[in-house]
Each structure stands twice: as structure tokens, then as C-alpha cells.
Amino acid sequence: MADQSGSGRATWFVIAIVLLGVLIVSVVADHAGLTSDRGDHPRLAGVLGSASQSPETVAVDGAEMTALMGSCLLDLRHAQISPSVAPIVDVFAMMGSVVIRVPDGWTVDRQALRVFGNVRDLRQRSADWSGADPTGPEPPRLVLRGLVMMGSLHIRS
Image (cartoon, rainbow, N blue to C red; front, side):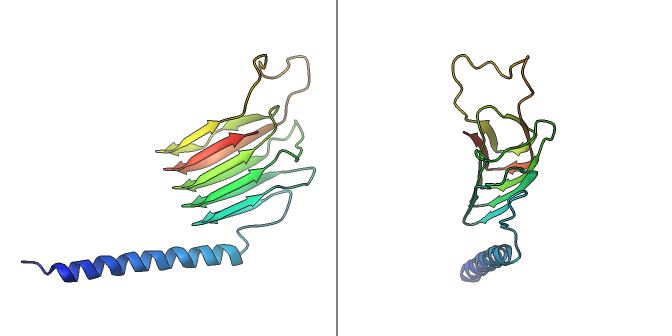
């Protein structure tokens, strides 16, 4: 018969090594600048924790968000983008949650690849909302791309 106590010790050893690795990655992410305060291109990393940012700059040229068993929140409701430029938000969510808050008038192009995850636009639309005004200027456009694996990406207002 196999020694079950040795197998149990090996399992706990592997779990301890994995947890230590995740802890090291989260500490390195905080100290290596993966969460940045640069307003025109925010970078957020939520590794077994959370990160949030609300850039107050006039021009946002894109963002990078990583949620690994954690959460990230990017609030772009006070930011402005030019209609001719479409900023790109790169998202990686693995067993984590990413929330992006944008004004209702923005167009959000969801190009993120989903693997057992979901990408939803949860903005409230009025009954008479019918998209962009064809006679007016084109609304600002935001592009979301990346990977959502066993996690979620929600767009809110």
C-alpha cells in the first residue's frame, strides 16, 4: 500500500510553494510599478487584492489592467478622449474581476477574448436611447482587448 501520509505532506508542500510564489508576485507587482499613477496611461494590478484608479487628466490614451484572483476598477467618467482617437485598454483577468466606468455616451468596442468568463456592458440606457446621433459628431470610442479567463469584465456608468 502507498504511504498516504507522505502524499499528504507533498500536497501541502506544493500548496505552500504556490502561495509563496503568488505572494512574491504581488509584492513585486507593487514595487515594480505595475500600479502606476501616470494619468494619461494608467496601469493597475490586482493580484490577490484590489486596485483602483480614477484619472483626472483631460486626455487618456489607454490603460493596462491585470486582475489575478483580485479586482481592478478604472473610473473614466471624468476623463475625456478625442473622437478621432480610440484609446485601447488591455485587460488580463484570470479568476478576477475588472470594472471599467465610462460615460453613457461613449461607444465601447469589446474585443476581449473570453475563456469561461464574461464581458458585459451594464450601463443603464434610457428608453429613447438609440445609439449615436447620425447627424452629430461621432461619440468617443474606447477599445477593450485582452483575455478574460474564468473572470469578468464589466462596463458600468
